[in-house]
Structures are given as C-alpha cells and as structure tokens.
Length: 449
Image (cartoon, rainbow, N blue to C red; front, side, top):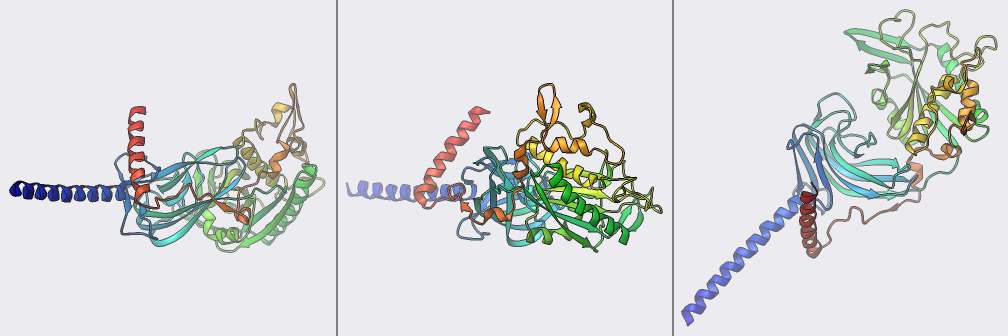
C-alpha cells in the first residue's frame, strides 16, 4: 500500500507541475496576445504581427506592438461611444524603430486615427524614444467612432516597429460662440524643383500690402454677409522660410498641401486656437508663367490640417492683376477668393453633420450670376443665410453651422477622462476573465464570418 501511495503522490506532483507549467505558458501566451477588446486589422494580410510586449514598456502595463516587415497599413482599433458635436482628445505614448513609409509624406507612420477617415494625429517615423502623441477631433453627428492606433496611414504604407502604451481619452466642451479665429500665412518664397528645374519665386511688398488689405475686408465681409451670424478675426504671419515641396493633383495640378508647409506653421498653430488656416502662396509670375502646372485655380479649399480647415490662396502671376485690390471701377469685392474657400470648409462641415445643402459652385442652377465688380457676392449672402429660394422653400447653410467649429486645445480646459474605455485588467482574476471573454468573442466572430 505504501508503494502505491508513494507512486500516486509522485504522479500527483508531476501532474501538478505539468499543470503549473501549462498555466504559466497559457498566461504568457495571454500576456503576449491579449488586446483587451481591440480589433486587429491590416491592409496586406499577414504582413504585420501584433503582440503585447512584456519587455519594451513605458509603464507597468505591457505595451501594444505592431511589427511590419513589409509595407503595410496595420492597426488595432476599438469602437468608442461618443456624444454628437463634442470634442474629444485621445493621447498615448509611442515608440518607434526603423519606421519608414513607401512614399515621402508626413502622414505616414505611427499615429492615432479614426479608421475609414482621414482624421489623424501627427505620424511618427524613424527611430524615436517614448513620446506623447495627441489626437483631437470633433464627433460631429456621430454616436460611435472607431479609434485606431496605427502603423501606416491613409496616404501610404509603412514598415518597421511601433509600440503604443498608456491610452487615454477625454471629453471636452464644445464652444458655442460664432467668432472664428483665422491664421493667414503669407509665404514670401517658393523654392521648388519641378521636372529637374529649380524655380525660385518671391512675393513682393505690393503683394503683402494687397493681402493685408484684403484680409481686413474679409473680416468685415464675414460679419456683413452672414448678417451678424459670425465674426472673423485673422492673424497674419509672413513666413520667410521657403516652400520647398508642392503636392500634385490630376484635376488641379500643383498646389500647397498642409504637409508641404507643416514645418513652418506647426509651432504657431500649436500655440494658438485657430479655426481656419489660409496659406497664401506665389507659384508663378511673368517670368515663370509656364513652369509650374496650375490648372486654372486661384484658391483651393475643403482641405484640413489635423481637423482645422485649410485653404490655398494663390497670388496671380501678373503684377497688374486686380484680384486682391479694391477698385470701385474694376473690383469691389477683392475678398471673394478668401470667402469662397472658407465657405468650402463650411460646406464640407455641413455635409459631415448630415445637412443637405446646395453645392457652393452651383450658383447658376439657382438663378445667380457672376456679376461685374461684385462677382458672386449676392449668392454668398443668400448661401450664408439659408435664403436661396426654391420651389420647396429656402436652402443654404444652416444657422448653427457658425458654431460648429473644429475641436482644439481650448475645448479641454474642463475635460474629464473616460477611464473605462482603455482600462487594463487590474488583477489576475480580471485577466482570466479577459481570456474567456476574448475566446468567446473570437468564436462569435468565426460564426459571423
């Protein structure tokens, strides 16, 4: 009997040891692969690896790691419930190693984003130690958003290693005022290489004077044409550092995108609370009239710089142009280009909030004309006041559009954190519960697919 008891004891000890090892290995697997409700996705399947890193960490919790050995757009994301028309701020710590993009763009790298949109934070590339990244957005008319921590981007793919840690989301307070703050950047120099030809173009003192006068008129026009529904204040910055790259589009030719001038404007924008940005550039003159392909535009709008409206204002090639000069016999509405491009941003915002409005360019369909001396001034006035007459009533921008401004840092003076969204397991019991929840969730996804 003693022999059998001893043998049983040995078997029990061995079984216990095996069970402990199995549990330890299972726990280690869980530590590496538990993503706490995050969904992992990639544009190129099996080109990226998702892991929880127990060694490279910013704090006590394991970091979330994406490794892409090939160029890919990989992310882990979680759907978050939000309140409509509310500013939110998402932050996290990011570390990178060998991150490169498949094309030259500041929008490719490790970043925070809303999946299936162009809304994103700054993107980190190369080799970088832990740094805090911030992503601010407005929920607009959405009730849920899919917040992604991403290695890649909408503009291209990336490869390398990226670690993400210490996630936080905060809800801010939307502004209710209708005073819009504008930043107007006048770039004094454009030094670009187009088709192996170096082109150097400068603005003149007369250009600067014209733009400053036109900006003053733009501020007045916003108040007058909206019939007091909005006011405008514009800070003007003259930027000596040259524009050295241009973006290209088949429809518009060469233009200045936010990425082309980000280095020159980012510090100014970060230190202030602007609602819209104008980038005033010269891309041609009499001498270089045919060197840069520009397909008949003097202004380009409906772009954004991290959620803030962004417009190009191009100076005319001819020094004799009266586009930005007031003259009662030639041009009584020189601020039209600025107003037009700003209205493109309001048009875009209205559509994002679900409003049905006329297209800004469809003035002729509603019986308006491009009039001598004042251009489309009457169209803009009715457009801004929802006073365009149709057989079904009056249409145009809704009155509330003037308070639906982009989210910015000033919205978070009294922010509060939504701590439950990214809460990590606090103990072994919660971790074990997470194992089974993830198991059942994966089973459900298998059957759904």
